[in-house]
Image (cartoon, rainbow, N blue to C red; front, top):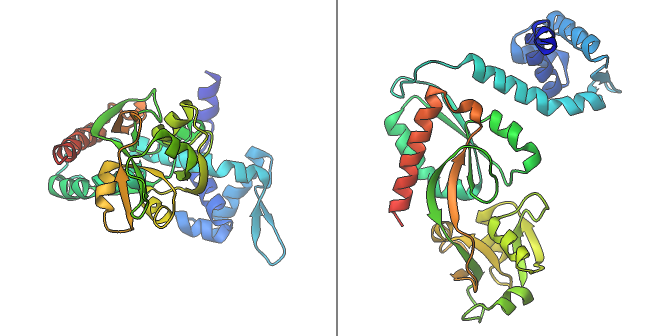
Length: 308
């Protein structure tokens, strides 16, 4: 009851004003962004300052403004809050893909974008010509930001083994391969080769990893990573001409053929199964448009799977 009373006493327009102020760091530009005059925007800033008991924007030499520590901490929550409000008030009981102009936002790795993008684009264009897709590329999703991220987007393309505990629809299977330089003399990789060779890896942070790399760690390998990138598609260029090894998905390796002097080989162990999926937050489960999107993604995934 207390929380409801507190929320009822708030002017939710202030959330929009807060986001604009934190983005622009200027009363004038923030007002232009959301269609408010400078006096109205100044009044909104004054109300926000009273609410937070903090200046939020502090004038600095030269006439500009900088954000206070509290304001800096509010940037991401303000963005998420506005995105959630937009979703709540744009919800509709029905969804007609032929007439809808809805925008669907999906977070994706460059791997999933490369494998799914063409078929997804073609299918959406045919089934829902007015629908827009906004594909936000992410290098990794860590557990500490996952719930917030999923609340503010329609879906996340990520394989099983990285995240769990959220609803998902499986899209297609893939398998991990080892990538080496085309002139690497090795014929059949051994576990000793993996332990001895330097690696080009992805992410390499405690809360961000590929399942296959995590599996090697669990097998007792201390991978000597020389290069860390956050894009699957850039890996070949850091393997070519070296003695490095990288783990790459077979479907992506096919699409990258000829772009760098590399080749792929079967790993000397059985990698974890690779199943790409679309994940979403339970708050979206009963949304009519989201139900349509999930069905469409299942069809797109099946088409990708049949092309193996």
